[in-house]
Image (tube, rainbow, N blue to C red; front, side, top):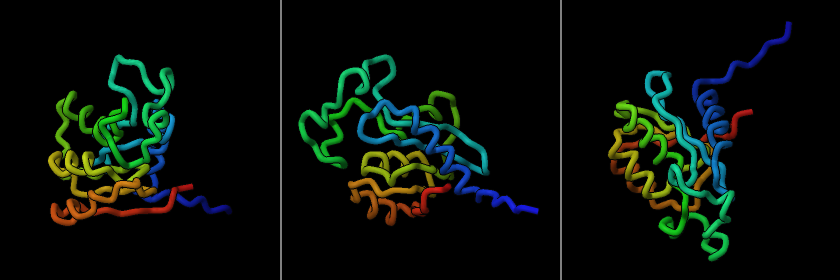
Length: 153
C-alpha cells in the first residue's frame, strides 16, 4: 500500500496562498496571502491595482519603467499588497483579525508589517524573503512570530 503524505496545516495554507497569488495583476511578483485563525480562513488577498482601476497587466509596470528596485519606493506602484488586501477584505466583511496567522508567499514590507501588527496578527508564515527587511525589528518588538518554510510541493 502506498502512503500519501498529508500536508501539515502550514503547508496546506501556504499552498492556498500560492494559488491566491496567481490572481495577482503585478508583472513583478505573484504574491498571495491567507489570514487564518483556528484553522479557518478569515480572508485572502493578492497584490494588484486598486479595485476598479486599470492594472499593470494592462498599463505596464511603473516601477520597471523607472527602474525602481524591489522593496523600495512603495508609493510608486499601482498595487495594493496581498497582506493589505487580506486585511481590507476582513474589514469589509466585519471579520476580526485578532490573534490570526497570515500565510504569505513572501515576508512583508514594513508597511504591511505595521498593518499586520495593528490588525492583531500574531504569526506570519512565508516561503520567500521580500527585499525589504526593516519589518524584522518591528515584529520582534511587537511579539509577532515569523516562520520561513520551504515551498510546499
